[in-house]
Image 1 (cartoon, rainbow, N blue to C red):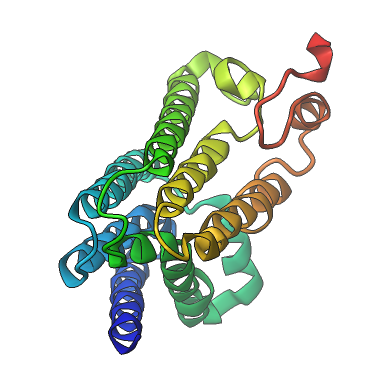
Image 2: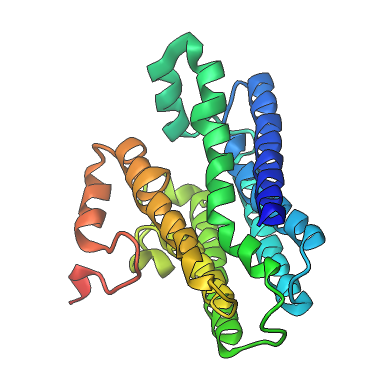
Length: 263
């Protein structure tokens, strides 16, 4: 248990150091949107530190670490490209205006270090899954979890690609994205991300006490729905937009489903 506690402390400290580095960069740029890019990198750091520190079943360790790495790198590249050269994300701009000249230090805790804590908490499944040496074989949970993760990865990456292509088209300026996967969910990218973490949870169910890591997918789902994702975005970027409100009335917020206008 003492070794486990040391692992958790090391991972939390590493995530905090990484996000603090992101905060320093944000000060130089006067733009905290870079925190979004660092989000995926924190999980990669935790996954690889756990990989090298623990002595669990090597095949499961490789699977968990690579899945997190693929997801984190894709998200880092996507968000870095999307935000390059742009103004601060409206969600953060609202906080900057609210806190005024003190935002520079408040952002360290409210944006960056809180993300480090969430990264560590959400990654509990990845950490626990690599600790256990049993079972020393892949189980049905491993295969089911991988398939769920793949489905989530495809949904998130496809939704991001569709939205990027939509935004790049000048003809779509000031229009609401409601085609492709966005026809069935207002935030299919967030749903895909949540699904990937549910897949990782199912993989970890193969190990003893894996059920207790359900906090990981529950936390990321709640975060995407109520904290930094759906709710915050719709309260800042789209507040007062009548076209978007019509879209809201017809389209599922999270889980893809047929829109009301199609029924």
